[in-house]
Length: 124
Image (cartoon, rainbow, N blue to C red; front, side, top):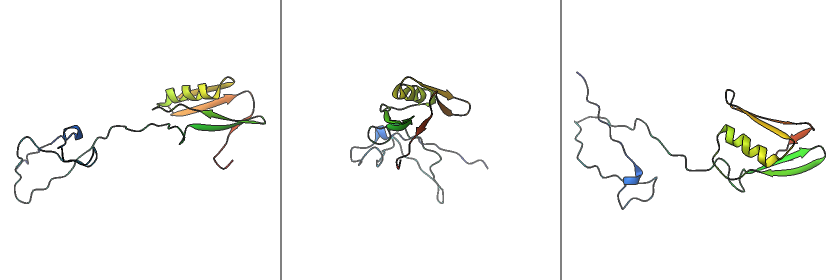
């Protein structure tokens, strides 16, 4: 005996007017779905859009750098970044003298400078 599989796709953009928010909502189906007794229904998967920035002003937008004996702050603009665009933003924020590269295979950003430098922690 083969069980019938029914899928219902739900999108919060089509929620009812009495819904509380985009994450706490109700949906009115266009037709009734009848399930037999002792039938089980479950959520199989869910997709959520990316709705926040990877770098946000005042939260994680600053790099504290000690270059030689000088300390300064490199500020990265608020935005959503992927590895290559983040490396480019870091390069711009750090300025001349730094070579910033992104290795897509290792998902790693490398910083190079002819002088000794250190990325400081919050405590430092």
